[in-house]
Length: 180
Image (cartoon, rainbow, N blue to C red; front, top):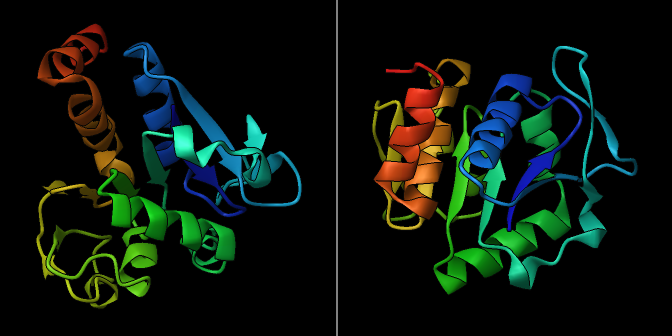
């Protein structure tokens, strides 16, 4: 099971591209609202009903945590105590954590990027506290996967598939979508 966290103001393209492509690769993925309600509104006013609320998560059975960016979604993620605790548990256990666009800021502020390479939305590099900043579309550094923004959402999602199920699965989904 993989969890994609939704907070009001999330970047719709980033969250839903990851969910869509991972489901195409037969990866069990659930959207998780960190709000009081399952209905979460993206940065562009698109309402999405999350699969579960944060408190319903089975984090010990989860294989990966994924944070989409967007504003103020990323700020809402930063301010959620329970999410930050789960991120720390995952990090300590060496389990994979992924973040795109502004969301690597959550990892930087939590001290989880020290010694890792990472990328973030252009102009926000100072938020990658302790990281070696890279300008690549997607950066994989041990168990931390980061990506730049909405325009890299497909690359990010395919990198997640490759990480979880191997390069052949990612290639198959990419070919199905006519993505090169």
